Image (tube, rainbow, N blue to C red; front, side, top):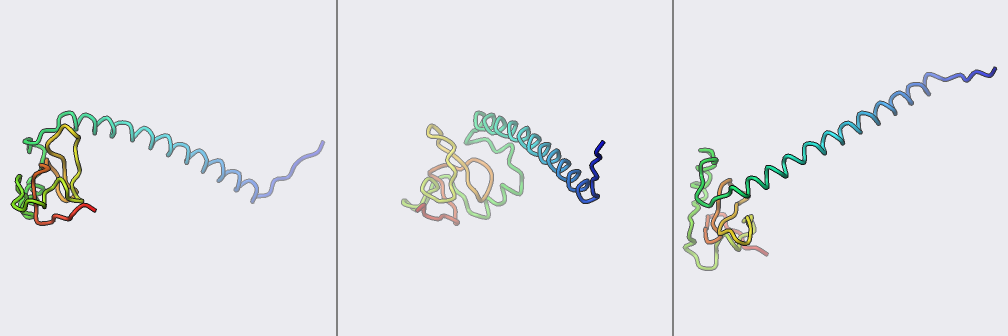
Length: 119
């Protein structure tokens, strides 16, 4: 009978290789499970989105809106949220969307002092 001798180096490399493969697979599977609820939450949030609903907005976020002097109607005709690079449209049928600077509904006709023309 012929016996194979394994070196310590071979044993450790196989052990680490198999362990890394199992751990990596578990991480990938877990991350896939985490993404599904986030997509469903986004759909649910957009379905319940209202331009007048400030109930989920924290006090600090409301203070940010005030700090940036956000108003629903722009005082400058050509500068409004709908053509600002920081505006995040909610949908074609909706009159409001969001902003990357603060949370909460933002009207397309609105304005704040951080306006940046969309290029």
